[in-house]
Image (cartoon, rainbow, N blue to C red; front, side, top):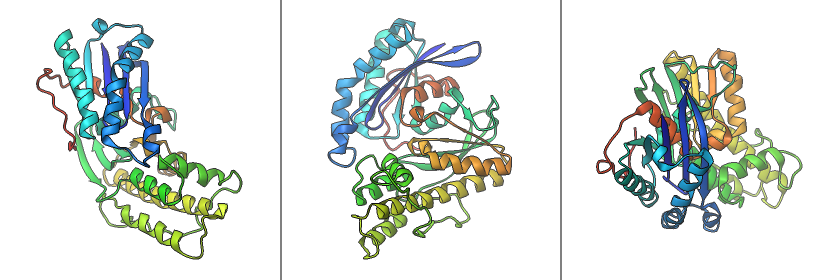
Length: 348
């Protein structure tokens, strides 16, 4: 079985080919074109700009993915595409392209929820801390990205229960907005992680304990998140007379302290969910899951608790076609080309 997966929910235009060989999945190609440089000028993703860039990139990206896999469209058994959630313009580019291919080639289509894609990518390329080669169910999945911060409990049959999510800003969105306050550019997650670790310019790293930012909802008793207040707390510190952004150490301290506040909340809620639902496995996915400090602190706590932790490589943490193709192997909900519709407000 060979599946071509296409992802266009935001600013990436991505296609990948995944095949099943000897009951194992194998990544044959993974191609991503991004319009990031365009969005850096505006400090965030402009949906119309992203969609126009994707219109130009979608066919070349698919062609390259097939070439790298050594296959032609006729060799593909199924097509898979993200149909939501996401920005409506970008989603339409991917969905309508796949619908056309499905009609012309008479290929079945698997519609994939973008959020589930970030979970199932762990089944393709698990980086499991304790080096075990399987992922155990039931498990807790933390999806943490620019648009989402959610916890779900997934069972062996891939059915799942949504446990909680953000009430306002997602963690990744908070990273972006704080980076803008610190004049670090876009995207904010990598920029804040870099300055917290290396300083600006490279020198003394930031002190995560320099500023005691609030840990929103860390003891709320549920599995919801909120990061808008934390963002405001950072703004208040920046505007105070105690921290001049011209001082390189102050930027690094603010970045490191903010990052630590977010990580503390994410780790506490995820571990609480693992304990309450008595699972032995945690997996994480989404762009913020590439944060090295988040991985490190989750790893340390999971090892103390005897819980396995899995996460994809950094290149597969951000949006990509491989996660869509991989999810299609497990979901296998085939529809006809005329049944699938872009659904920007899709959730779990």
